[in-house]
Amino acid sequence: MPRNALLLLSRLLLAALFVPSGFQALSDIAGTTGYFAGLGLPLPTLAAWGTGLFELIAGLLVLVGFQTRIVALLLAAFSIIAGFIGHYGQGGDDAMLAFLHSQMLMKDIAISGGFLALAMAGAGAWSADGRASSISLS
Image (cartoon, rainbow, N blue to C red):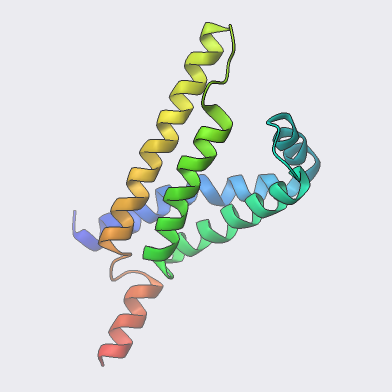
């Protein structure tokens, strides 16, 4: 598969996680706030709004490939931080729940790797970034 097609597919797959998650967080702000309060985060309502907006907007930016390198770095950091806040050491004495949280943490770390690769490679020609660079070169 050509490079630009793979970069487009990568952007689509990564955005497919964050756009719906951000939309869901914003659609049920009370539930999202409750989740963050349960994690012991300060200002859980602000955290819920900020997280939902960040996931939605950053996911859309990755999807269209605008400012991809910067947004991918931000999402890599976000994924690591969110993984540790939401999953590290969770599950208590329930072995199955502890296992699931450890797997979710590893998933978040792996997603960060995908975003770091995207930050290094850029969005490719089939993106807003690619379109902007072809216009500036003309």
